[in-house]
Image (tube, rainbow, N blue to C red; front, side, top):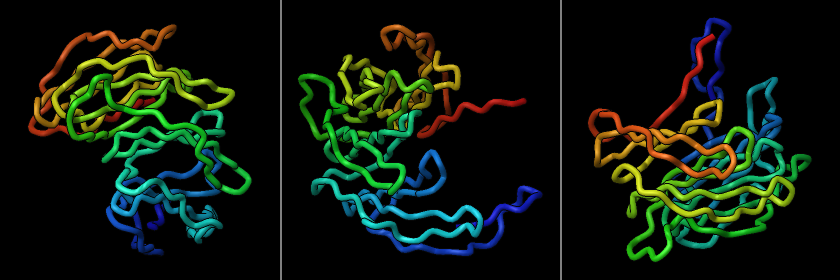
Length: 227
């Protein structure tokens, strides 16, 4: 944990927290009251209470959210309504849906889907997932098949309905959705390129627009807005 000064400069660490194996992602809850860290090699998500005034975290109760062995929890996102969490597992490509109790910072699994395309034959290797800004559609990338799978999201229950997969850049480790929710950009570590898709606002379908060179082994995409 590092403080950020008024000048924007990051200060020295004020807290160093041991984790399980292969700590992978770290996100705060929408209300900034809790923070969570996936441990890919330990099949767990660490849960902490967060004090934004002091900038310190303490273990929550319970302190760990467990998933099945050899799933490899990787990335996760909160639904905009703050009631659900979506988690993609690297080693199984299982896509887990959790209800989220904001009062206690706890997760409860309600559904399991898959980031794999239909008739998949190979070793699962899922990578990333993102929600539309309005939370109506969710997308997940899978590297072995080089595909992005789409899901419709029920805002009331949080449950997912698969909408199918589309081919994308080879080994799509990272992708992103622009703040307007109209475009998705995915990069391929082995294709050295980025594909941009238009997102159909009604169906969630992806329409390929263009591919761009992206340099050697790209693995992450961010959209940045300037005021």
